[in-house]
Length: 153
Image 1 (cartoon, rainbow, N blue to C red):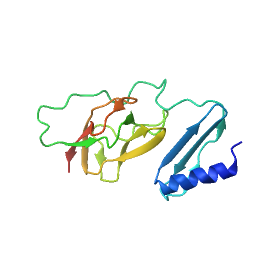
Image 2: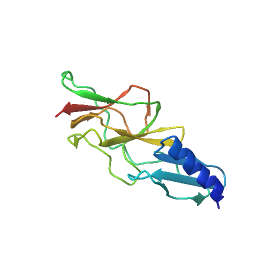
Image 3: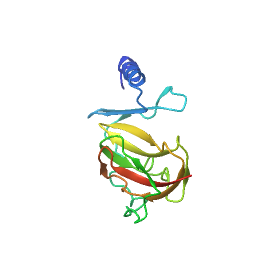
Image 4: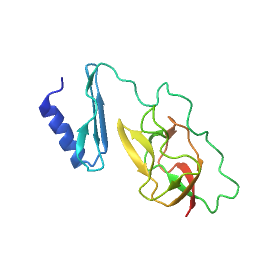
């Protein structure tokens, strides 16, 4: 069982650094803490033993990467704000955050990019319709890499 002082310190660091999720693992313990919409940290699943890493041994990707259309001048790209691993859904058993044809707004979460065991929700920051998904679930992405193409509203 994790020491409550360690847990309080983790929550404090999470709030101070404005993290939305914290996932720590070692040989004996696993702790995942997520901040919900209210911003209050929640302990999701402290567990003993190993836990599968999201994206490993998952089903086929939600959307196949597609080449950018020849006429992409009117489309806006949603780019990765960091280097990490792209996830199209919040967990292996869920539906994708967005699919081609989905309407989005600036605050719509379109994916997660995991960087250094921190799962960062990526928001669209634009309004429109998802036209293309350019990366597969579990792919490594670079800073500035195009993830989605959006037809602006």
